[in-house]
Structures are given as structure tokens and as C-alpha cells.
Length: 467
Image (cartoon, rainbow, N blue to C red; front, top):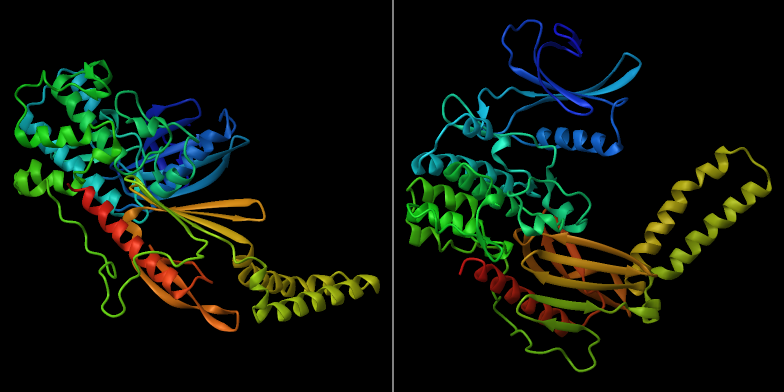
């Protein structure tokens, strides 16, 4: 790539960075004269592995869904063919300024007031990322990726390592992203969540105060030893002590609360005791009292500890054969199978067997809906990490995790299928924009016991996070 060369709608002005396969340029639109666009270009011919392509696309996807003054605005991404090679292009807003790592290396010193201001601005950005559904985890919050603008505000850049918190929890250990000294233990284990970025922010503050990578500083056990920073203000000390905890569960201070503390907008005592968010349907409802135990003969298995609540649901088994929809499903699939067989036997044109594909799909969907509960075992695990549901059907396992803040209303509702000639009921749990239906075939008493148990456990976990 050369100065003045056109890449898509942009004209390259000056190269500002280069890696193994990608290069970064300042660019402009033809009608503009200012260097107001950053263009990142990945040459597939020079990429050593598909991981480089995955990282590039991950950054483009992350930026496309973000909108915050402290994050580079997404301008677009596309592919071009040039010099017998395919190149991926990502265009984003140019952030004027220099990163904190370069500023400290050049001799810049930061006093405590400046560190509090920078950390508060960074907390605002992290509060925004954590408010998204699902939350976005940057995974590399370091001085190198924080730009100090001319107006003294900051921007968080380089979202190539970004990943949503749900995916991080479901697929741990796939890729280690981060910089030594700025990543917490759970991220090393591949289990990063939105609180992992809080650790990186606090470690960045320590770097600004000391001018050294936190990995080079003394520690006690697994925690950084801040006793040498004797002049820390109470509010900065509170934030750092919370966010530098090696145990993610102890990072209880939210980014929004930390920003208010650092700016002096909230008292330390009040902000350290954040209220538990109110969620609908978590209060006991009037009417029939909840049962205190499961009925005799129940096949449910409920195990409770200080860390989690585990509920194992048995499959309905062959007893579900009384479901009224089974004969119709058998007839439907049998008829479609007979029709398809006859079409092949008569050697009809390919269009005719292809015509049967939608009917096969409908048959399998009905079979899954009706037969699934009969053949599926489920296990529900509620902990600080969220609500995890594991399903096993004919030896095939599937897991889904929802963060705790995504859990909304819990209620007992009629199911859409009938079981043993009666309208079945099930427990419905709001999970983000979707609903989790579980417990079909259980008795009313079993469902009410589970409803109460889950509501109480969610309350306890949320309360413990702010104590």
C-alpha cells in the first residue's frame, strides 16, 4: 500500500502501524482534507493463519455494535481484490492523541487527581460496555489501548480481542487475549466476563501512579501490594482494592458507582453499598402458600450449597406416550416417507422429491416439540456466574448460560402440549429477550416449590454481591 492509493472510498495519507499481516493507515474521503479516518487493512495472502482473520472480523463486528464517545466510531468494513490478493478493510474514527503507555515512556508523570479523573472516564466506558446485552468484554484494557485526547478525555481502542460475556462463559479457554500484568486470573483460565475489564482498568491506574507494569510490583499472595502507595486517597484506594481482587466475585463495585466515587459525586459509604436492582416477579405472590418441600415420590434432585443451587430434571420417559400429538406426528412422517419413496421409485424428476423437504422439516419440528421432553434430561445451575442450563438428549449435550442480570420474571404457565389428557404446566423464566420453558410434566406442587426456591436463591446471590 502506498500514500495516495485509494482503498474503497478512502485515500491513504500516512501509515501509522504495521503488524505481521495487517497495516493501519490514516485516510480521508476524496472531498475531505483532514486525516479523520483510520483504515486497517489485512492481506489474506500474508495472514499466517485463520486466527488473524477471526481477530480482524471480531474487531469489526464489535465496533459495529458500539456507540460511545470514548470508543472509535465504526465507519464500515469491506473486501477488495488488489495485487492478486484479497484484502479485508476496516474503517473507523480517528482518535487524536497518544496512548498512556507512550506518554509515561516519554517522561509524563501523573498525580493522584489526574489518575482519578482518567480512571473515572475509563469507568464510564466500561459501564457502557457492561450495560449492553450481552455485555461486551474488551479483554485487553491496558495503557497501550487507552488514548488521551487533547481535551483530556480518553478513548478505549483496539477491540480485536473483544468478546461477549455469554460466549466467553460457554466456550472458555479458546483463546487467551490480554497483556501480562493487566489480566486477572479468570481471564487466564479463559473465563473472562465484564468484571475482568475492571481489573485491567485498576492495573492501568497503578501503572500511571508508579510508571511500572503491575507485574513488576510486589504482591501478597495473588493480590498486588499497594501498601507502598501511602498517599492514596480513600476513594481511589476503595476502587483499586475492589477491582484488583484476584477473585472476580469480590469485584463488587460497579463501574458506574466507581465513576461517581472518583468524581466525588457519591459518598464512599453510600456507593459501597449499591442497592440490588429490582426485578419483576421476584417477590412472593399472594394466594396459596409455597410448599416447603418436594412431595414424596418426586424425581427432582435439588442440591444447594453456599456457592450454587443445582436442580436436576428427569426426562418424562415413555410415560409421555399418552400425549395426543404423537399419533399425528407418526402419521405425518409416515405419509411423507411413503410419498417420497414412491417418487423415487417412479424415477420422477428431482423437483418432486425436493418438494417433500419442507414437509420433512415440519414433521421433525413437531417430533422434537412433542418427543423432546420425553427424551431430554435437564440440569439447571444457578450461581454468581448466572443461570446455566444443561440438556442431554440421546447422549447429545448442550449448555446455555445467561448472566444473572439477564434473569427476569419467573412464573408458572400452561404448556402448549397436553400430557396424560390434562393441560400441562411448566416454569417460565425470562432470560433477556427470550423465555426459558422448563419442568413440563411436573406437578403443581413441584413447580411452585421450584419457583420459590429459584426466586429466593436469586435474591440471596444478588444481595451477597453488594454486602
